[in-house]
Image 1 (cartoon, rainbow, N blue to C red):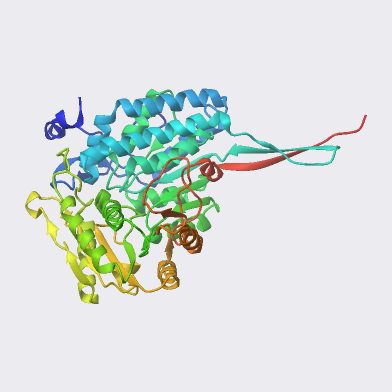
Image 2: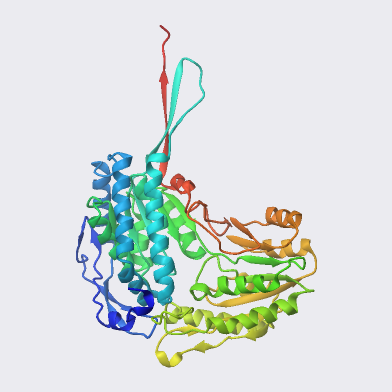
Length: 499
């Protein structure tokens, strides 16, 4: 059945959720039995109750993960065997596409068409890609003298704690799960309290695919309780965290207070787009910027929220972007034609509206939007918003908003554009728009960002690393480089005696 033929409201009304954690291969109640309401940002409805995991529950999950690792029920399997299980896991994700998409949309507010077309397929592809990589990643032999043989091997770390955000719950989880499980680790996943539903269902699908009990555990709960307990746990070997820079700092602190576990932070961004006057299709640049900025309601760490435009074309560019804004009018996320949904909760709505107010107070020019939308729905919607004449010192130009708010800054020279783009505590992504290949390469090299797009934005694939410079984090998700985060290098040096 196609997406447009499904009555998503009917399915939502019939939905029954199980908010209990998955530990040691089964659903279970938490030790204290506390729960919290799971509220949909679409209309404020209560979807159900979710277990509020505490330190005791995290400890049970970590113990289960450690037992599974130590007895080698997963790490000891041949790579080809792990591959088969993970490929089955990916297939089951696709088979449950409609169920998972509905959970994702109801839980965090994104349009159902994107949950169906983007989030579920990307999650399955990530798991399948790492499954296929398992038996194609080789160890090394070092160049030594004839009297020695030095083997360099990658071994799984052990127990990985994964803490993921609410903006792409499944995709962000898969970026941790794929390489961690493929390498032979056990995982304890703590999803955001704002979007825990798909993570719990993924754990069940993994078990159905044959992943041994205890290898993949999920403990829902609040960051300051379950998340902190996981990061502090002395038997967790590494933390893969995606979230705010503020909490990323705490992850490093928790590692120092516990066992000096490895911490890999994928944090915030304030990505800059640089549009030069020699680019020959300003309309495409404006459409791309608007589409990337307003996708997922602007709740993307790599959202191109700072657009630096040469002063000679800035007026035209701003008008082109303004003309695109009506195409992203917030609407019912369960309507298959909707392209912009709801912000994740009331707190995020207040945050975004506060930044919009600061833009006005700072003297930026409001071009379009800036208001709450669909307030009568009971949900949390904001109009696509564009500010012009923004100064790089303003809050809306320096701080991550995580909402549909675009800032346009003007520059005179290439050097000024580069300086403005790099004048940020973040360095996640950037984009250069120029028809001159020398300028494109020159500027791309000068930008301090983990990914630089040229004459496009957000074109992407699992085959390339994702991560940033500066306070955007350390380590990389995606690609073969992600294995670096979840494996240890071991050298075995053998002495060879002469005959």
